[in-house]
Length: 186
Image 1 (cartoon, rainbow, N blue to C red):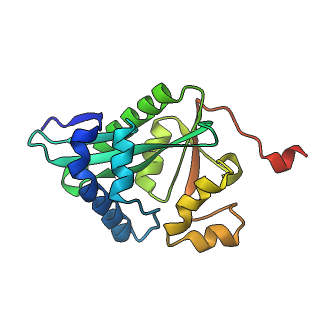
Image 2 (cartoon, helix red, strand yellow):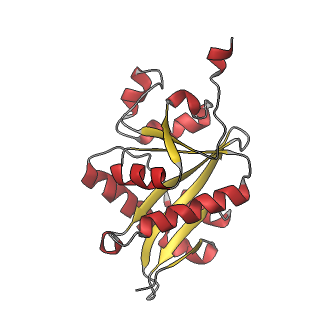
Image 3 (cartoon, one colour):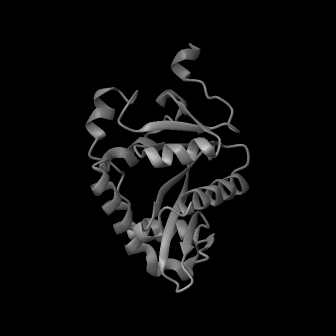
């Protein structure tokens, strides 16, 4: 079965509720944290051209990923990677993620491309696509970025450690220049 992977647009708005539910259900099954997004947020990403969707030939939703940027577009992440269970074990997640990385590079050339995840499968995909684990100090430091973590059930760990660690693994794409921690520059 050939699955189409494309940049999501307004014509894909009808999938937003299913996307949000699928991401949430996967996190619940894994017992891991995830920053919860709303269908409206997903639709906005589609309108901005910052989302990748995978569709089966029947038009059935198969997978998704979106792009976020912070600190005046200096940092960009591909987030919310999900594949519907019946479409797994077909390398679809890697294809979706690769399309999202390519789209992020197209939209934000020169930005530091990163991700955070608790998923071993996503860490493997990220590594295969050129990401490496990094310390949280290499992530965006603005409050808007960190506010996104507030709906995660593991947020208390992040706050308790003063944002130095959590259950997530931070990863930076190898094409990104290393960041410096402003506190270390003084």
